[in-house]
Image (cartoon, rainbow, N blue to C red):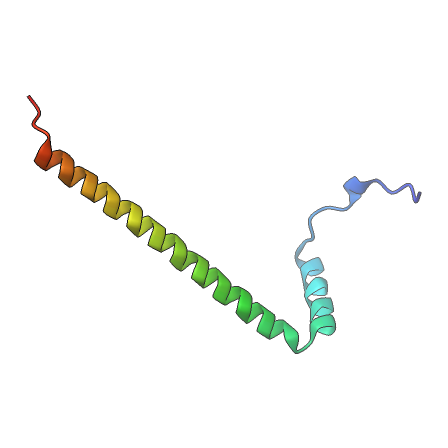
Length: 75
């Protein structure tokens, strides 16, 4: 054991992220832009899917309100 507590290693700061980015560029080279592009497209598709689900939920809620207003008489 080295005797170094794990608590000394925290979340990387600004300079550390720059070093990590440089290392990633050196390792991945030409593949990195394509990978980032794919991740971006995946995020966009995920957001579109969430919006589609939200639209469906809103549509069902509107249908329920219309059914309640038309079919139920409140006395």
